[in-house]
Image: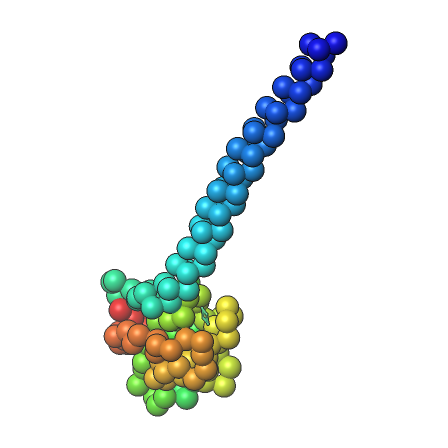
Length: 152
Ligand code: FES
């Protein structure tokens, strides 16, 4: 009888110690996970101040006639936006939002729209019209050769 009484007693003492260790390990894992999550969030937002994509080499975007005079065209694949205020006067900007790096998705009434958090940019100057972005779109050199727009 004493053996059967002491045996369950021993079992009761050992598992709580293991549970305590496991709980502690789980708490540490949870804290580490939370830390990683926070680090990922802060990294994501902090890249907003990083350099947006600008072509390292000249990129041919297509026919200059595709950019309307007094308007602009978005080249999402190249992450560029080209505007033409007056005939033959083109300006190009990175189309990568300076907030967290999303690529602009459309131009509405001369404003480049970022689909991620709603920033708006003037596509003729690169200037921020609405945050959360605070930095303008970087300007990219642009020229027309043989009727084709070449940026970068
Ligand atoms: S990435 Fe946040 S507003 Fe563009």
